[in-house]
Image (cartoon, rainbow, N blue to C red; front, side, top):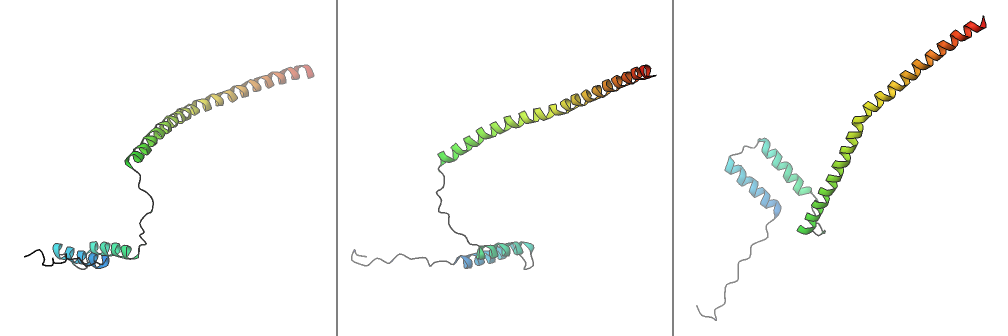
Length: 132
């Protein structure tokens, strides 16, 4: 070959239809594993195929976070989780003291009831003596 001979054009791959590629892959998979037509796995694959045919998949225009941004976010999340854990521990501790507080409060009204009853009984006795 000489330098003046035209070089052959590079082969271009034809554009592959994604639906056709999926069907081809499913058929190859069925042949490879000898999957029968009534197999439940085929029903699942058909459901995925329906989803991909009707899904409105649009590429996101948002910028993906960098590793530094991701790491900073995780560090902030760790700090917030630590703060949350501390506050939750304080609340649990307070909730554990409530039954004791409640029992203390319940004992006070009992004492007040007994004291008031005793005073009323004494007043009744004294009134009874002097009224006759």
